[in-house]
Amino acid sequence: MPMAPLPDFDTLTVADIARMAESDRLPPVERWHPAHCGDSEMRIARDGTWFHQGSPIGRAAMVRAFSRILRREADGGYVLVTPVEKLDIAVEDAPFVAVEMKVDGSGRDQVLAFRLNTGDIVTASADHPLRFEEHDDGPHPYLHVRGGLEALVSRAIYYELAEFALAGDDETPGVWSSGGFFSLAPVASAT
Image (cartoon, rainbow, N blue to C red; front, side):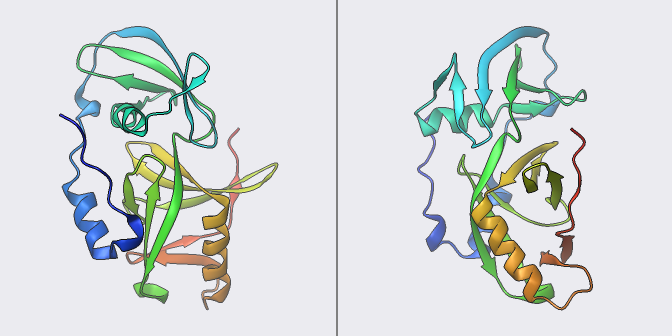
């Protein structure tokens, strides 16, 4: 069954986004534990481009389908998993990239919704926190998507977040979303 076309993010309200995120049913990859079958020969580049055997996967629907069976393992590795097989996949940074942001409200009542490169929509909240990690090339903002999977927030969106943080009157620079406060103070990278 083909996937429905993705709606235009610009035309959605934050309430629309919340309803869509709530109704999105993902496969129960956390309950699937097949034997490890090898390497998928796939890689997700830092910019969110998916590759198979060195060539970019050009079909957005194919990338979206694969992204829905992606799982993070306890050892930090990534796999594509179905009820009958599990294959390793290389991820250069984060498996998703937040490419658009929609803001509703302001201050403590603000809600930040993000569209990912796969078309998924995630609202920053206690269940989907934003975090900022310091790397050699500067801060890297991340948004928790699901099950240990994160989205690297694009540089342009990071600058928007920084503007909100600097305009706020909080003691620590940060942003509010869905009642949660997310400090922009980066922590040192674990790598």
